[in-house]
Image (tube, protein in one colour):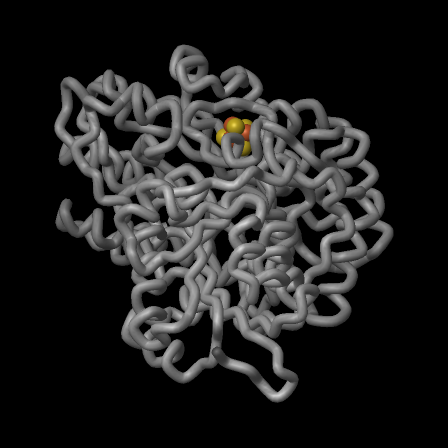
Length: 488
Ligand code: SF4
């Protein structure tokens, strides 16, 4: 058992080194979920370290060297479905280089798939399910007493009578005062490539979502509930990050920061008053943008420049099928309003449903072009193995490799199309959507919007997943972009 000079035990948090060529396109993103967990470890009297292998682009070989050279008693890894195989691999490596260490997995995938994880992955000792802060504290505080350790709420482990899932803590009522171990991040590492020289930080203003979109893992993880932090607590954290670490681009990581209109407007007012001279990237639902039409100037004044809205589909029937609870009119209006207020809109359109046909793909593309968000993503419908869609679509699933559950690789075979055809349809949609966009972006009057759009497009065209996909069509998207720019 490792003890440092202070006789403290050590926990090492590691990000799984998963790269599908999408999220890493626009920046290096701080592993926010580890920050409050590490603070709980410190509260329990442990020393904590966050090793962001993903942002460092360390592969498994580099991770093995780092783990061999680092002292730790517990290794903790968070994972979603596509990152799970790499998260598990990190645990395997930890056991190889430090056979006495204890490995813990948390996050959405292990929470819902704990039985499978603990049955198949012998190198994973524990799953900490659900909201992690309180269980993490208890687990570490009681670590030395195995009986007490095994009484930790939310813990799932191999017990004497098989896999045992302990009772859960209720979700915390107050998420305003959670301690945050910001000092454990190397803030220099995090930047948003679209705004060169920026220092990127991440803040969560709320947790959960009370909607029930059938494809979504977040609402399930947070038990269809939504909890907002007090506006003042969020802005205090932003000021701290700005003043202490120079953060000047904030990613709001929560799915639904605007849900409580009163809280949201108060937050905008406080951010404006704090005068942080920073940018904010966020996502929300289309109907809130429409609701907030009168206060959209405040969004921009607060620094919001980029809003992802989940349009998902361009016909009401599909929206209703996935229980999105929005209207096509609201989607269209939200996208227009975002542009009118000098902000960037981004949304996604989902393809590859079991009843998908070449005609329905063409219809989606046409409607996406008419909606005309600044950035559109064409995603493959992906049923998480614990979501409603899994059972519903099970007979159509052809690919069971979790690494491919990344919304890029089609894992479902529609009745009237092959997966290769869906893959090709995605590439074609990207090509047909972006080629005219590039010319359009060059003519945008607002200098900020124009430069932002062109830099982002360049990054998207360089993204490894698009380069790989376009290569199947014999096209180099970077060259295509140069051709368009050169001719205009
Ligand atoms: S609105 Fe967004 S976060 Fe909420 S359930 Fe739907 S997809 Fe998930």
